[in-house]
Amino acid sequence: MSSGIKKTLIALSISSALVAPSAFATNGYFAHGYSTAEKGLAGAGVAYSQDSLASATNPAGMVKVGERMDVGAALFNPNRQYTVTGTSSFNPAPGNPGCPGNDCFPLETGTFESDSDLFLIPHFGYNWMLDDKTSFGIAAYGNGGMNTDYSSSVPSPLDGFLPPAGGAASGTFGAGKAGVNLEQLFINASYAKQINDKHAVGASLIFGYQTFKATGLGLFAGKSNDATNLTDNGKDSSTGFGVKLGWQGDVAKDVTVGVSYQSQMQMSEFDDYSGLFAEEGDFDIPATATIGMAWKTSDRSTLVVDLQKIYYSDVASIANSVENLFVCSVAGAPDPTCLGGSNGGGFGWDDMTVIKLGYEWEQNDMIWRVGLSNGDQPIQGGGETSPPPNGSEVLFNILAPAVMETHVTFGFTMPLDSSSEFTFAGMYAPNNSVKGSSQFDSQVVEIEMDQFEVQGTYTMKF
Image (cartoon, rainbow, N blue to C red; front, side, top):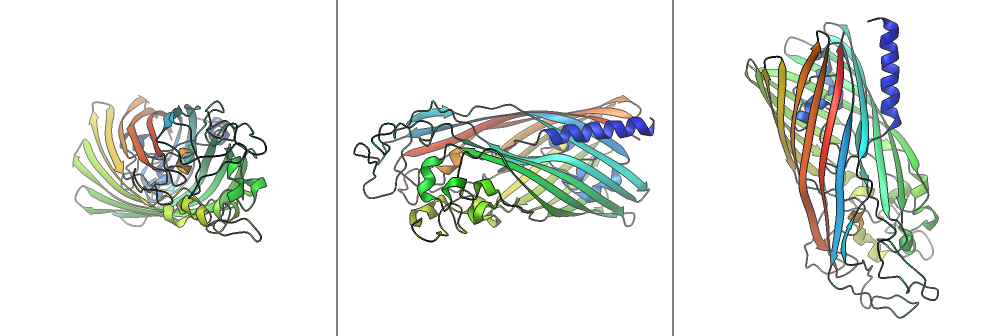
């Protein structure tokens, strides 16, 4: 292939990857895997690198994949809904809503589904072998995201009671169409070196780009330090950098171990939402750490297992409890516990630990893969009967129902000719839910989701 054709393919592939950032919501808001081969193994691959997207998991493995280009896309289908039961504490006089004895926020009872449930997410990777022991690679991929889109036709118990003089209300939170859209894209430049026959190391410099918008949160203005930058301000963007370090080593016959660590990415603030996210719009990308093993069980089969930790608790806008708003007062100076404050209310997420198990085998010219991953979802809960202000973190997480715990995957790679192949992966995440009493009311809220995904990659080897 001529260098001109190669450059054209690279430019087109990078451009397509940049056009459509991700809208995942799997392990919290991180993707369950990155490369298509790894996704067939439930995302496992820190000790078993197979293509030029391997740098997203462990840059050390890039020196083992050869010179190649991988380009493809995923079609992702998350189905999200929430259900509200129970009687609200809301007992207003017309034009003067009030909640005797506590600070409540009533929701309409019933089950309501989120729209916008199909997303196309491209990816791209290229790995250059500088010599037989060093490589340089570049990859563009979606890290994760949150997306919800609840119609303004959802009824609101506040309709006819808002001041002044019984104003109208509709939508989940009484302020019209409600939802959020967080999208994240990584550009990863990696360098890897085989330091001896058994060990390789690697490092990546990662550029992160994320966008965010929120709608329908206007009735929380009294809990925000900056109500003009709380909601309905369109799409805002944020950028930042991070690093990923990795090692792969053969520790015994047919056994390889891998370790990687990605730093917390210090992102610029979402200025247009400085009255929503803690620390005046700060929304950093959490650190992750992964350790894993690949065991070549035969000449034609491999078992892989990864253990990953995602440190959501280190990011205030994600980890802070919405319960902080109960002591918020916007009178006078900015209050650190109000939305946008240094300790402002958030989604109440905890760290997440995920175990990923995959098995791969060769059959004639085909490579087949299956996988299973599991992790406790990050939303903290207080249980269905806990009264406010000590209920579960379900109210705000209607916007971000990151409840998934289990992913079942399969995939294959088939050769197309001597220098190209096609890889496919499918994922099903069965329905899971979190149920608890709202911290702003006596109602019970259940948030739930299931997911489907298919992903394909075309590979050229050089």
